[in-house]
Image 1 (tube, one colour):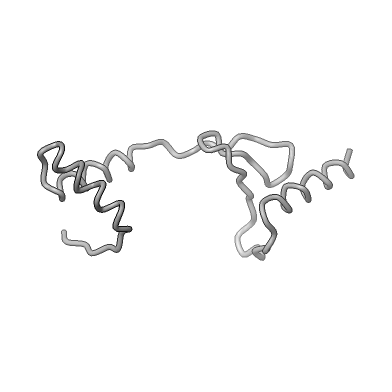
Image 2 (cartoon, rainbow, N blue to C red; image 1 turned 120 degrees about the horizontal axis):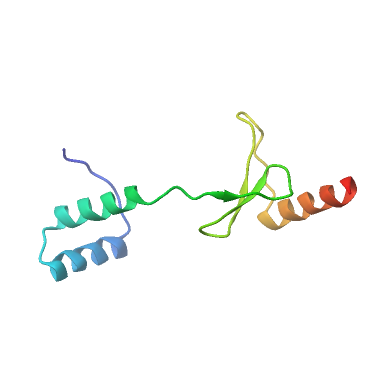
Length: 92
């Protein structure tokens, strides 16, 4: 199947160089990389004492959970974490 996608120039250059280095066609290298990426396990969130907040075990980044249809906030991650800590302090 033919597919057209826009990719950053630097990414395409890296993939082309890998294909040349490995002696493969570009399409074969793209296929190989996509299949490798699809085989990676889904990140497992780490539980947190903050309700609705977890930490991704792979990246260490915070994960904020919300119910479907929830309003999206314009808070920064720092502000959201501070808010979660304040709620924790009030409950304790």
